[in-house]
Length: 64
Image (cartoon, rainbow, N blue to C red; front, side, top):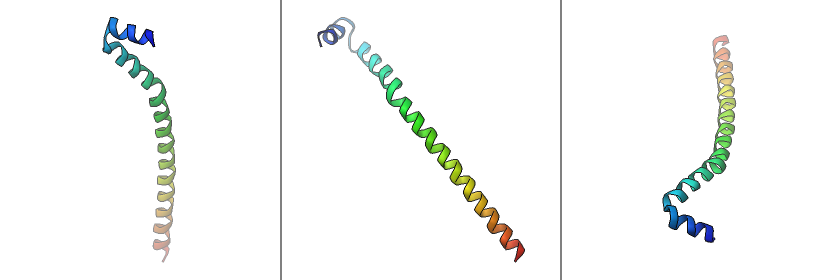
């Protein structure tokens, strides 16, 4: 705790903000990127299934 107080008094709040942003980027943002990648993969699978169903319906309508 004293290290934090010394850091604030010697270098100002800017250093603490930069340190927090670096920490935030390396932890939370990495998890969010992984989650968004997972969502993207699921959406691509859903789009592919919809295209297949649309093609099946179109082919069915052509036959009848």
